[in-house]
Length: 344
Ligand SMILES: [Zn+2]
Image (cartoon, rainbow, N blue to C red):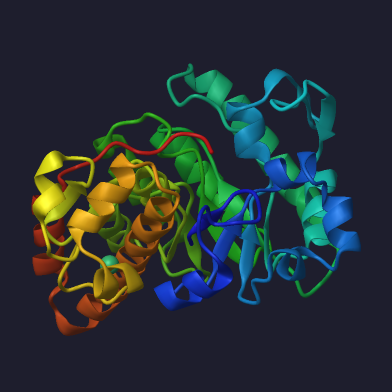
């Protein structure tokens, strides 16, 4: 899922997203509810109409941003009080309000409110947050409004295998439409992430519901996650790094700000079919970035989103034709093992 934080995948139109092969996008409840507010978007016909995207939309609950961006948080069993990072105004988010906001936005998939904690905290603190997340999950289901909106539960528990096992079993026992794995890509090691996915995959074994790994990933992260049964990802990296001039190709990352590209007539990636690669040279992009021309952001983002979604399509095909290991080795060679993302 390309990430459309403020009801826009930065620099792209809905037409760009469709051309890139996007089947679903993610939007952020925290940001939209502070500005322009969920009530205003509802009055304007809902998020699909507001941003003119007629494909599926998944909204997060806002919890991740509350726990990573907002200031002066107070968490209690009922919910969390925080001050806006925009104007310092005070807000209250409860499991019920998170569901209400997402119903107002009219997304296709709503996420439950969960409590994110630093996985480095003592196990007892991680347990308290996890058990609260479980109680909030049940309350979210009870508050579920529009029956056509799917609701996904979130497995938490930090990087403690016992807690993760318990969380997977509690969340899987509830009648959610899908299961998400939260609290990863927040500073833990790659090995801790893989070990956590092992435990969750074991706990969910043959559960047929879609599985969503939140906030991951980079080209090298997809393979291990898919191996652990993950179906769905969201990540700001492809769009965020594009705006700095970093583009992704089968040969790895290129930084278009490097002066070496100023005379390079080749497309970013000769194998890529996106509008940018069909039309423009690396030299042109390198020039646009140096001149700080706005078109640079769109062209680089069109490429990175197209390339990433194409990689996922190739990965899906590779599962069927036995070339998964070869594709994985090629991507690890090109991209190495990369650190996760931070808050949006
Ligand atoms: Zn391209």
